Amino acid sequence: MKRLAIVLAAGQGKRMKSKLYKVLHPVCGKPMVGHVLDAVNKVNCERSVVVVGHGAEAVRSYLGTTAEYVLQEQQLGTGHAVKQAKALLGGEEGTTVVVCGDTPLVTPETLEALFALHEEQGAAVTVLTASMDNPQGYGRVIRGADSAVQRIVEQKDCSPEEDAVKEINTGTYCFDNAKLFAALEKVTNQNAQQEYYLTDVVGILVAEGEKACAHMTKDTEESIGVNDRVALSEAESFMRRRIVKKHMLGGVTIIDPSSTYIGADVEIGADTVIYPGTTISGKTVIGEECIIGPHSEIEDCILRDKVTVKHSVLCQAEAGSETTIGPFAYLRPGAKLGEHVKIGDFVEIKNATLDDGSKVSHLSYVGDALVGKNVNIGCGAITVNYDGYNKSITEIGDDAFVGSNVNLVAPVKIGRGAYVVAGSTITHNVPDSDLAIARQRQENKPGYADKIRARAKAKKEREQQS
Ligand code: UD1
Ligand code: CA
Image (cartoon, rainbow, N blue to C red; front, side):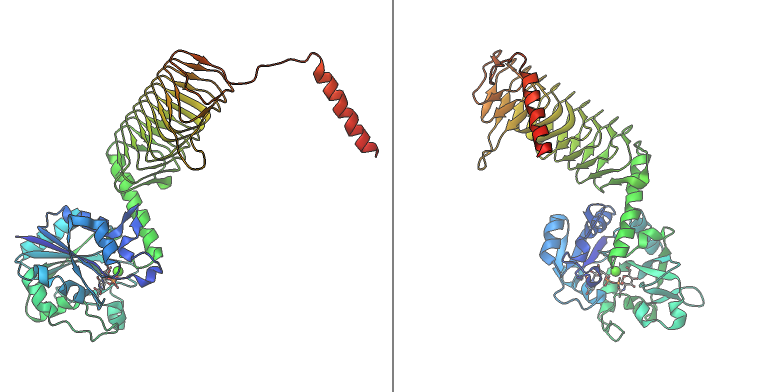
């Protein structure tokens, strides 16, 4: 049977009280509608249509060509929203899964089970339901004496008996495509919210003698619909646990799952250990046998195998295998470290390449630089890359040694194997193998320290007397 999908994403999400459209609110770093479409794409739907309205352009540009789109100009309800897809899908035959863009936890496994039950039962509609202790805000699933599904009633339209029902509509359904669009023609807005409810389709089909089924998920977390920021935080914590568990089952040691935050699209190799207080986000890829954390923030980075990162912040950076970073390092966008590189405490690297075996062990800023292999950059040495208007490049050849507290005033080149003595301010290129010294010569004044001290002491005593 041909599979089709409709994702509802046109609502503004008033209850979020946000400038950001509801379905674009991220859960574990990824917009809710992205999670939903990922799940839909994993169950091999031939066509996926996203109904957009509020923030249509923003939703479309985020999802790109992974779906087709229809515009719902006015948000007159979920039934009205699905009806907008008729222009694209009305002529299709098959099973259509409808998912709300604000239910980010729905899994492909559950969608697969829903399709399976629907097709096996030859149903016109199969609703994904869940049993909730507190069904507040959800539509209730009303079953007949024979326990067959009869209809769905929105909370605002519930009688007291209906209100007491714990089985809720998760907002995910499979429909016979032709029957769905035919029944939508009969949906009215005669209800508490004066909206065209998709949920009314269930009752309409049953009244026409069609079969309605329900698949109840055991995992109620999966059914959460995010209407406000309280639910958003619940979705975040459910998703976070799910992601962390996936990595643990994949061979990653996570010392404290409750204080570890891993984005939905992060990849981590086996035998890597993540220490507490660590956030890993975006498109980060981490290799095997790494040690990450404690207390580190890593966004959009590529770290190869056996990399160590402690108490550090990394953004859009790369590190080769066996490189060590931190404690207290800051790698900014464009930091590219080779293998066996050492970046120590209070070092900031920005838009700079450091080749294999190089070391910046403490208190340095290296920005807009090309650093060769086995270079040593001493404590407190920095690149002076900015004149208030322009950024300039510093180049340092293989095996060069830059002493402590050196200023490399860019643009400048330090040759291979060159040696820059501590405290130098380098404004001219240093040829290969040369030694550069750019500081005043030292002068010692015999016994002068005592003289100075005596003078200072006398001054203080005069002040205390007056
Ligand atoms: C809906 C269901 C409810 C179910 C709950 C599950 C209806 C009438 N009610 O209620 O039974 O328990 O989901 O989470 O369907 N949308 C549009 N256009 C519209 C209205 C909504 O695209 O005109 C989209 C929203 O962006 C959202 C989704 O449809 O992604 C659901 O709408 P929402 O208003 O959140 O419905 P609920 O009140 O949560
Ligand atoms: Ca909702």
